[in-house]
Length: 312
Ligand SMILES: NC(=O)c1ccc[n+]([C@@H]2O[C@H](COP(=O)([O-])OP(=O)(O)OC[C@H]3O[C@@H](n4cnc5c(N)ncnc54)[C@H](O)[C@@H]3O)[C@@H](O)[C@H]2O)c1
Image (cartoon, rainbow, N blue to C red; front, side, top):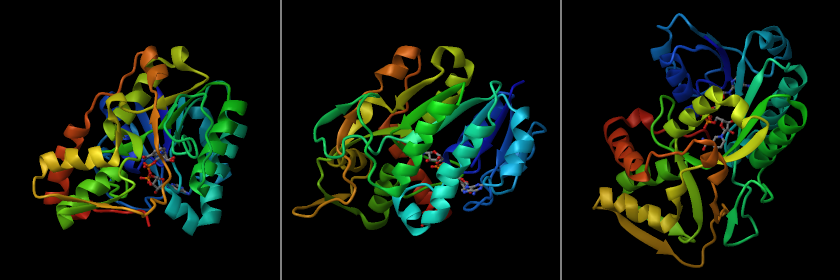
């Protein structure tokens, strides 16, 4: 079976992806410092074809020693999100960009790299824009810039790659993030019974964390068909505004009150529709709905207080 290296494999996306890959019989090696949830991979130590290397992915010698063994490399290790990167600027640059630079230098033709970045730079300053992969990415945060620079480098230097520009991810994973918009709205709705919205008509695209893992597995199985390209990755039916999202949550949680605050700006300037047609034409379509995710999240936050975790 093919061998997969996932850096940051204990994280929100990585722990879901590692689980699904092991279920399918792949050999999975994770490099992760376990910065957040120390138990997100506990259910995987059982597998003989699983290994955790609890190390800093910035160690070049470690990557050099390992890289030749792997068919697929999925570099997820990063400081994720604008506030965290703003707080730890040097670590953000060395982790999010530095490690991709090392990987690009060391990767051989054998290594197939699947790189994820954020689509959060789309639409900034271009109101009402429908974005496809040719739309310019103009990230305003250090986080967005390190991720976009990483994508540029992968596209320039790597022989075999696929890049995904992700919508905002939602849903439960083994390492939880409650800072992501849908997750945060559901958590706040349950805790305060009230959601306060600024600029409620700002739109975004969303995708369930299981669909992200499914897209990566689809890519591994159809690599030659997809390779050396960049794709938007989101749920096409979930190009919606914050107010529509809040109303969807209210349908599941009737006690919720939605309050709109006028004359107050949302510091997150995102407001755009994203086209996911390019990846859909290749045969992958995200299909886990927001309703399924909201109903799942309500159960998680109601029953497990340990699942409320932020990065900062
Ligand atoms: N979740 C999203 O909405 C989203 C959207 C677009 C792109 N992405 C990208 O997907 C990737 C994973 O995101 P996530 O949401 O799973 O984040 P996460 O914070 O849950 O996971 C990151 C993981 O990286 C590990 N890590 C950080 N620095 C490390 C280091 N120096 N050495 C070893 N391990 C280290 C952490 O311990 C953590 O387990 C990131 O590259 C992120 O930019 C995520």
